[in-house]
Length: 404
Ligand code: UGA
Image (cartoon, rainbow, N blue to C red):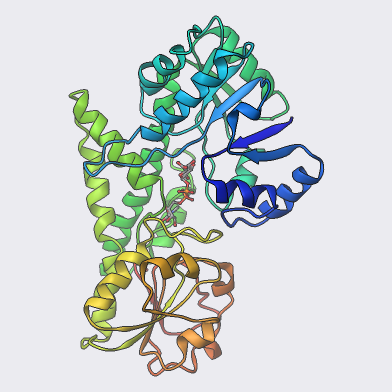
């Protein structure tokens, strides 16, 4: 396919055309430069420079408003630009990829598109095609999807998109627009709930002296439960789960079918990062002014993204105790520096650990999995608490986990 990326952000467009990826993911830069070399992809800020296209994917952000409800300003702005574009073009199919609540494509996107004077289902196609990619694993997930969900306003729209995906070996599910929208929210809400459930079990395990990972393994062998997303720790972060659960909760109130489970998920997840600080206080009752090594800042391994990362809440709590923070992250330090310019950003694990009174591990980077006892020799006290299951008992002695 020939792909043109359109964005209003000039810097992002410049970077993409230059072969620089605006976000970090292993393998992404290589794939981008291959596509650029083959002249198969370029970026522009000028949608009008595109002559004709078969598909337009809307992939703008859908952030939360202060009350948790979804902010559709970017969806509306992109839809208006697309309306202007399709006015003078032949039939193409508009595909909403952005995560939007049930009814948004039909009630918000469609009316704006029809301001072009063209009619959905006749003059242009309209689909909702949710994305299920994980950050840091987006390439792998894109090429090996578990399923492809296509919501279409009519059969022709859905058929054309199904054809576009014909090379993928994944079940394709055809639905109407709002069902496709809901599948995305229900999936993210379920995953967030699954993590929260195992975190609660983990908190109980901690008090019982049981390793929650053994419990999760035993549970996961049951096919009905499955082993994925049962990794207990300091809670889910990232730009999706909290935002989507909040938006779905707000929607549940709007349609007068209030979700109880979702508000509990959000409450538990808010407290979960602080568990590691409680454990730290048990080991270092006088936390005031201590030097703490923080290994891992990104909301998860494989990305430089810190949005909603548990590390943000934990660092803020440690700063309240006037702790000196020596942080290390292989990719996310520059992003965290914008939020906390005054903590130390070390170039290596060894620098972060040197002279520290305790160490907490907050992201499951592979690099940290290789640490062994000798790596912790330069600490003042060998207090190590991990918030993600990272260290190996065969290599490191005397550490504890937040739920294990
Ligand atoms: C999530 C979903 O997994 C994707 O399917 C979805 O497309 C995406 O949101 C989205 O809506 O855009 P993502 O947020 O990138 O993807 O990352 P996840 O791998 O789901 O992890 C989210 C958070 O949960 C991370 O902080 C991770 O450390 C945590 N997590 C994950 C756990 O604490 N335990 C687990 O077992 C799994």
